[in-house]
Length: 479
Ligand code: ADP
Image 1: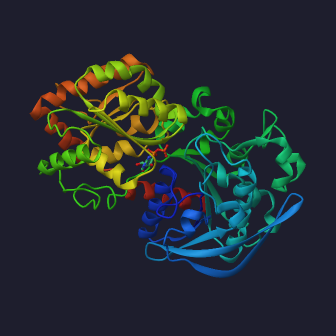
Image 2: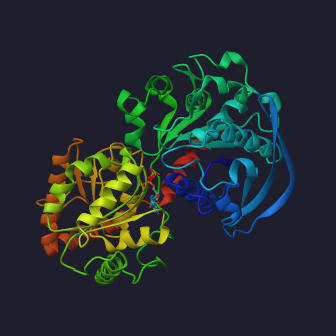
Image 3: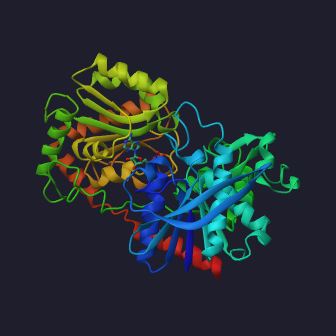
């Protein structure tokens, strides 16, 4: 099968979050299953300056965007054994400091940038026809609509079956109606039956209506998005398409996230020999300027700083959390209010709280290895990767029972000696604190904690199973 993945970020070329990991590693796993893959993404500044081996192609893109034409070129990169990665180069759109804007302000022309990208991707596919066109999130949602409603423009790919993956329904690509001409679609599609969403244009809504299959990144989230709390206004459309909505849990690339071989770590350890985890903890404490105390439980967090990730709850619970004997290390970037809160917290507790604002791949790995506990109290969580990384690193997650967190963790049960983490349900500070105190208590029981760690480390969320599920879905569509 020939599969084209169209996505706005793909690891290792450009990444702001889980989407990039998922598209990159899923593609590699699908290639291992014998499929032919081609990936399409924008040539951002991070791509152009990232030291990747890229080649120019003769393809010239010329795309009608409302009342003007936008031009671009195509570069190619490589991934895996033989995956071509086509990168749409248009420097005015993509040679910028950020992928989408800062955490506090999106670029004002994001609709235009990603409509251009989606059209460009379909132009590229005219020369590389695929059986399956798989689009991810709002940035590429319109590609599916263009393909389905303007078949005459893309005759080579017109028969392709389409899959849309919603990685996070909190981001739908909602733009003012005045931008409609950019889409170059018949005006009749700007109606509540299609793209219109309370007077605005909603890219994801369009895609949910036209995609042959809709997937999301965990089974629990596939159910949750049918409800008003998590459908963010699209629950009706999703209910309408319910028979075509499938939840497939993301996997982990254990060649990158494995404490036995992780190149970012001071020392390596395995499930059978956990001794070196202590050295990783010491090294993390040193890096973060915290006292090197083995006996103090170290809580780690790595996250976009947004309300989705449960930071309101952490703020509320914070003083009571700090009443316990623990150290906290946070790596993240995002909304200014949370950045300010955690910077102030680090000043208040210089020996117990250390905060690094920014994006730092190496430190992310070092926190996974060096922390004892990983805190992820998300308000909602389509899948979540860090809790799965944490399990592999023997760093026990405390999570809220939502979405992928619910699907990947079992609550600890002291009597039955089962469970891999500490799970709480109500979105309330007290519930978080209760889970934390349960974890801290077990942390003091050396044997139980080691057994819990080993159980966590033995869980397997490798991509193979998930890639097979996608492969089956594609086969079903082609049949
Ligand atoms: P989301 O995609 O919603 O942000 P996920 O848990 O699915 O959340 O994936 C987040 C990915 O981004 C993980 O690989 C995580 O390690 C990484 N990440 C998040 N913030 C940072 C950061 N500040 N520095 C390095 N890596 C980060």
